[in-house]
Each structure stands twice: as C-alpha cells, then as structure tokens.
Amino acid sequence: MSPLSRVTETLLAALGPAQVITDRQRLRTYECDGLAQYKVVPGLVVLARDADEVALAVRACAAEQVPFVARGSGTGLSGGALPRAEGVLIVMAQMRQIREIDAANQRAVVDPGVINLALTRAATPDGYYFAPDPSSQSVCSIGGNVAENSGGAHCLKYGFTTNHVVGLDLVTPAGERVEIGGKAPDPPGYDLLGALVGSEGTLGIVTAVTVRLTRLPQDVQTVLAGFRSTDDAGAATSAIIAAGVIPAAIEMMDALAIEAAEKAVACGYPAGAGAVLVVELDGAAADVAGELAEVLRHCEANGAFETRLAADDVERALIWKGRKSAFAAVGRISPDYLVQDGVIPRTALPQVLRQIAELAAERDVRVANVFHAGDGNLHPLVLFDDAEEGAAERAEDVAGGILELCIANGGSITGEHGVGADKARYMPKMFTAEDLETMQAVRCAFDPDNISNPGKVFPTPRLCGERPGRRQGAHPLQEAGLAEVF
Image (tube, rainbow, N blue to C red):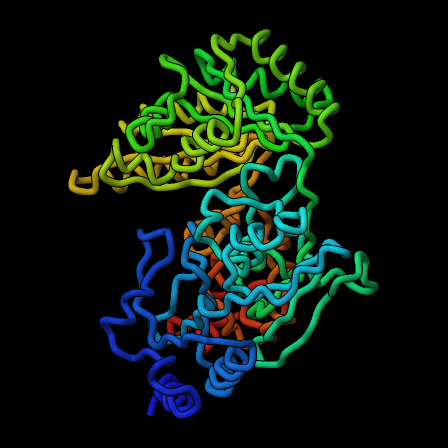
C-alpha cells in the first residue's frame, strides 16, 4: 500500500466519504486555482470543517511524508494552490464562521474560509470595515489573502493584508496547533506573523485570523479622469502624491482595458481616453474637500480632458465596476489571456509602459494594462488565442519579459498575487543564491520534511538538513526526481 493510500484510509475512517474525495471526476474540480494554465489532479481532497480536522489531515500526511496543499476559494492567480498528484489538498471553503466582531478593540476573529467582503459587511453595522480589498473580494477568502499578502485598490493608503493581521492560529507541518499574536497591538518576541503572512502556505496552514478593523470614513469622494495617454495619467499620479495627498486609491486603465470594460459592463468611461484614473479620497469631510481640489487641479494640469465626480453611491459603484471587472472583461476582446503581476517605482510608470508596448509589438501580442498606479503595482493582461499555433508561447514570453522589466527598473516580480508555481523560476533573477538559501532556511525551520505546499515560491527546493550551498553528489530525492539542490 502506498503512503497516499494509507493516508486515504486513515482520513476516510476518521471523516467519512462526505469529506474525503477520492473519485477522479470530483477531484478534477480542484485541479487548478484561478491560474488555469497549470493543472494537476490532486491525489486526495479533504473538505475540512474546523481546525481539528485540518490538524488531523496534516498529522496523517506528516506520518507518511505525503505532501499537502491548503486551498481556500481557489481565486489565486499564481498557481499557489496548485495541488500535488501524489498529495492531499486540504480545502477550507467550509470554514466560514465569523467568530467575533470586537468593535470596542477594532478587532475581528474569523475562519480562513470567510469571504473578504463578508467580513466588511459584518463589521459595517458597528461602523467598521476590513480595509484590504482585492478585486476578487466578493469571492476570495481571508485565509487566501493571508497566504498571498493580498492588497487591492485601497492598499495605497491602508496597506496590504500584513498591515491588518494581528494574530493567527496555525497548524504546523507536523500537525501541531499553535497561536501566534492576538488582539494586542504589539506582542513581544520575534515577528512570526511577518514570516507567515505572504508565505503562501509553505510554513503551515492558518485556521483562524485575528484582524484589525478600520473605522468607516466620514466622507468618500470618487473621481474619474480621462487622459489622452498613459504618460499623462502617470504624470498626474506622481503630481498628486508629490503634493502630499495620499488618496485611498489611484487606479489606472489603458485604452485596451477600457474597451474591454465597456463591452463587459458599460461603465461609461470618457470616450476617446487613452487612459483613465480612478481616484478615491476618504477621511474627515474637511480634509477630503481640500484633497479633492488638489486632485482635480493636478489632473487638469497634466492633461485630463474630462473629470467626473461621483454624485452618489450608485455612480461611485459604476465607476468602480469598470475597474474591478477588468480581469474578466478582457474575455470580451480575447479568447485567452494571462494575468501578470509586478511592481515598479511609481515614477517609472511611463517608461515601463512604453517598454511593455515595445515588447508586445515585437512578439505580435496585445497587452491591456490595469494597475494600482499609486504604488506602482502593475497587472498587465497579455491577450492571445490558444487556437493559433505559437500564440500561447509568445504570450508566455511577453508575460515573463514584463517581470524582467519590473526587476530591471528596481521593482519586484509580484505585488499581491504571490510567486506560487508560476513565478518561481524568476526568483533567482531577483535574489542571489545566498538570499534564497536564507529564505529556505526559514522554511526548513517550519517544515523540515518539505511537505507543506512543496514546489512553490522557490525554483529548486533546498533539502533540509543539508549544509547551505551545492551538495557534492546526487541526493536520493534528487535521483528520484522529487527535488533538486542548488
């Protein structure tokens, strides 16, 4: 009997067939996350309902040295929840309890499967909300947000998930349950939360999250500005920030992204725009009024030919609908597309956008650009038709080239989607071998057996227990094709 078969037998006996999926057709439901270019049918799926069941599944895997992968809503865009054919996929979509809304202390405690927007809706009656808001917030889970350190449109002012997590319950790769942090604002000791948030499930599985809630602002104003070019829109963005105004959000879309959004949701963006900015201001009414005047002044000074202020919540929602539907909307203008994610210094936006356009023209590929302009987080959408011979390969080349442009301009290969399986090969382009060894030493401290979401983040996983550096001779796992050594 294989190790996976023994794990299957153990979990079926403990949880029953309603929670342990073995049928191949049902397993295929979980073969990929939001990045459908990578697909692997998992060896086994466990539908966990609470932390005890997560720990049970992990202990069974640890006893047999079977790899496991955690999955929330499956909306990730880097292959972070890509399963293992010889492993167990632990799905936490049923763990959706909001355990506590502690308005007095501006805290909430939630299960990892709680949907991002559901938390905000639960906190709103008390005058609070959860600030990180990925475009997928109506479907993505808090546990997934923690794994990828997700951001969203409002991360310019409010920061990423890591800025709002104060405590975690964790099942370690050995199956032990531990609590890290809590409601206190500054717990003593090492910053293990900083290591865990954004670790993409490689250090264990989060089973509860304590988050910081943010007070609802007194006033919110949303501006839509149309520009002839992305250069003008980028210049306006830099001018706004340089003036000392920090909006809650500054989002940019180029002409191709606008075209897709109009076809999908009829958002009514300015006709003929080569780029639009969505600028949202929030806070005390008096402060917002002064910042609004500054934003309008800088947009007009940098070539905005039309500015539109949302008169009410309905108009605000329509403005945001165009931006938040952008990823899905490109399906209206292209049969296939790749979603990329990288970061550059904000002042490099015009230069990098021109370089992306040149790269796309060289490969005969179209790229629609949607991004968090305020903090330089790019989300280029690389369009192609998979039915055309060689089109997918050209699109992959352009997507990889965009990441290399980000690195060359002092940026990063990911802003909020994570590294996962998709970008691991680019890590050595951004980090030295010594950097990667140091990172993997941390991973080995949590997961010495390399069974917690293996094969993600790092291009060639270090085999724990070895001396740093290149090994002399082949390791048995290397010979078996299960791992590689730097």
